Image (cartoon, helix red, strand yellow):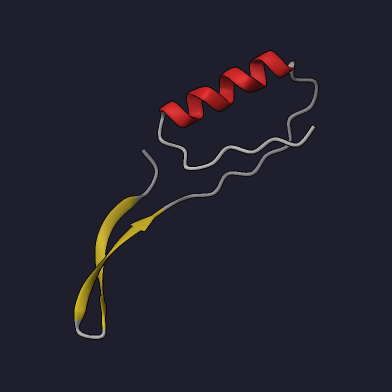
Length: 54
């Protein structure tokens, strides 16, 4: 799992925080079926957003 949780002091109080990671990549010659499967699996694993541009 990528990221973590914690708290940050803001105006004297603790505010919950969460660290996230952004992964950008370029994939060539991938079938739409495999891309759809990959997107679904990434969401299952906890991705907040999955985006593809044909």
